[in-house]
Length: 173
Image 1 (cartoon, rainbow, N blue to C red):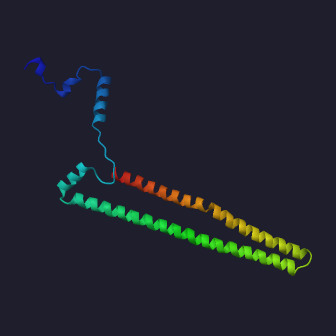
Image 2 (cartoon, rainbow, N blue to C red; image 1 turned 90 degrees about the horizontal axis):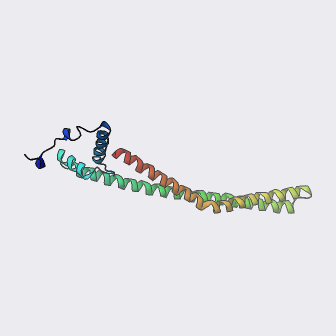
Image 3 (tube, one colour; image 1 turned 45 degrees about the vertical axis):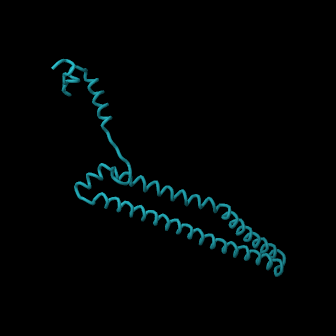
């Protein structure tokens, strides 16, 4: 063999190099050989290997994943529907309670002005006005704050989705 066609064995390549250089080359080689895959299913290569070990296993894994995603979507839909239903019931109850407070306050004002005399009439009318005012302020503040409550519910749902995705990534790894 001539010098141009000489074969160099791997253990001879870095034979005369300092240890720092050998370490640097080894790290570069190790970094270049790292392979990663991220996703809810195994990599295509791994699915092929599963299929070789047990025919039909790759398809079963895909079907399981599809059913799991469908279940997740159904649960998300039911959770959103329940949150909307809960908020709607709360708004209705709050509306009726505020309305009762306003009516009770107005009745107290009318009774204080028509039936009472002196200090009793003034105290009854003032307490009726206070009851009505507090109920009205509570109702208006809840109507103004309503969209913020919905935003908080959506943020909570998004956080839950992020946590689920993070847990799935841990399982895949």
